[in-house]
Image 1 (cartoon, rainbow, N blue to C red):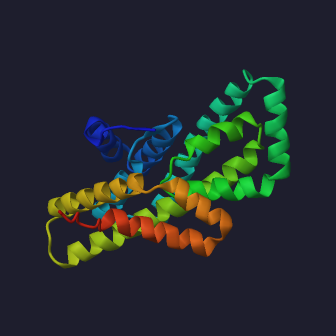
Image 2 (image 1 turned 180 degrees about the vertical axis):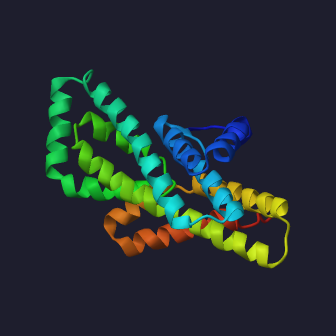
Length: 226
């Protein structure tokens, strides 16, 4: 999965938010999720926007989450379109798999949507299997609202703390932006395949694996020279 350089899209994202406010957040979240296998850091904008403008983080989370979920619907539809070029035998296997593990697929979509993981790897085959669109959207929307709301709330509390310390707004913006980019780096560095495999066994092991991955990336062990 490729990653769009933040500096390449920074001016566009800032323009959308400054010009359209919450509508800009919706558009950024939609665009940031509608292009398969491309990562656009829309959560960076969500966190920085809430931290500096001080709007209701829950409202921003819901708007961003719905926009992101609609973006993933585009990915789903591309998967469904690609399914037309799959052989009938493979298509039949996909449909049987969906019918057998429909509940598990719903949960997998929700978990992937609620984490900054490369979810398009799953969503395109889900679309090709003709998994019910409404169920896909509900699961994806729930997950995206969760991660967007958590990101917005974190930005709001951090921004409020910086404001109480008397730090000027432009320094708040820089601090929030730097932290957001660092968190984005951590999210992309995590080995999500290991985390998801652990969650398949049980949620406790999955959570411990996730925490271990975060710690190893945030606090890497220094190399000991021999």
